[in-house]
Structure formats: structure tokens, C-alpha cells
Length: 291
Image (cartoon, rainbow, N blue to C red):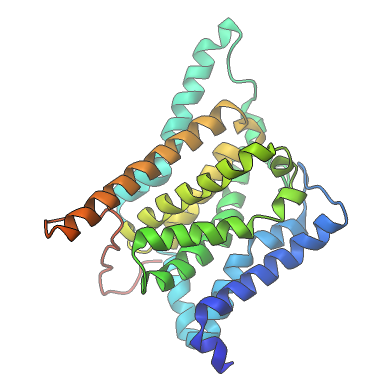
């Protein structure tokens, strides 16, 4: 127990991977393929990062550590503009795509899926579109972001810069996904030549999520809503095709701008010139969190 307290990152990663891979690997080995159906064991694997964050917080800092983690999970006050820039951008793009699709549908080239198709997602029960969105925010969002951005990222940033830390989180996040390529129908359909692009996409997503988390007053809820919304608008049956491609392209574009901004700031630092670091954590007011 003492060793675990001294090595919180190793403790977190051990619990996270044991939970997720412990659920996913047996399914993959037995030939199970997760499609549009309710797969509870698969969903248990998705909350591995949450389990790792809560357990490690309890081991390292006791009840106080768990309370601090929960406070960030429920932190709504991240700043209105960050809610608009984060989840708002994804939803605004989806609205534009939907309106454009309906406008050109008379020419036979509209979006091939309907609104109800946004209620179907691999591993989740088929439900109403907004019901699926809520499930994705809870399972994919809080289930992953409580660990990746809420626990691992702050610990890495004690030693490395936000950009370096976000890339490290992205690399670990990529390895965590590996069993899904043998288990999830969607992942299994990715051509081998496109797998590197998938991992580059995860690195880009990690950069964007670090930016939102650090600038949004360390709100886990903010990045959880972004994560769930992104998955909804790229992974549901209704989003396959145009929606997924457009949302992914925009996110990669935002990530590229952030990385370029950070590189420019680092160069200014080296030359002794004033620099604006896009990903620097924003100070959180010293007052009780609003739940």
C-alpha cells in the first residue's frame, strides 16, 4: 500500500487497465463481437479509467481525495464560453450538416440516416437519440474523462508541460483501446492502413481535451460532455459517413491550431519574448464548488 501511495500514476494505470482489459480481453478471445446491442460487460470496460481514478484517489488521499475528484466531476462553472467552444462547436456543426442535408435531399444526395438512427451505438441499448447522448456522457464521458483528464493529466503536468502531458495521455489512451480492435464491430471495420490515422486522431483529441480541461477550470464534467457528444456525433449509426468525417476533421483542425500556438509560445519563451500558452491551466477560485 505504501508503494502505491508513492507511485500514484502506476497505481492508476494498473487499476484502469486491469478493469478494462479484464472485461474486454476475455470477450475478444472467445470471439465475441460487439454490435448494435446491449453489451454490459463491454460497457464495464469503458468505465475502467473512472474506477482507476476513484480507487487511486482513495488509496493515495483517502476520503478527501475522492471528494475533490467528485467535486471536479460535478463542476458546472467552467465558464460559459468554454461550454460554447467545446460541446457547442460540435453541436453547431451537426446542426449545419443536418440543415444542409435536408436542403439537398430533394436532389437525392441527402444524409442517408434519420434522426432515430442517432439512438443506436455499438454496445449500448437502442434508445431515443437524446437518451443515447445522456448514456454516452455518463459512460464514455465520465467513465473515461474522470481518469484520463481528471486524474492522469494533472499528475503528468506536475512534471511536464500541458502539451507533452496531453500527448503522453493520448499515447496511453491509444494503447488502452487496443482490445477494442478485436472486439467492436466498428473498430474491426477500420482498414489496417487507417489504424495509424485513428491513433493520430486520439492524440489530436487528447490535445483538445487538455485545452478544454485546463482552460475550463479543471471541470471533468465539461470534457465528459464534450467526449460523449463527440462520440454521439461520430459513432452512432445516424452519424456514420458525413457527420463523423466532418466532426473528426474539425477536431483535428482545432488540435493542429492549438499545437502550433503552443510551439510558437515555446519558441518565444526560449527567445525571452512574451508568450501566450493556450493550454496553461486556468486558476480555480478558492470557494466551495457549485454542484
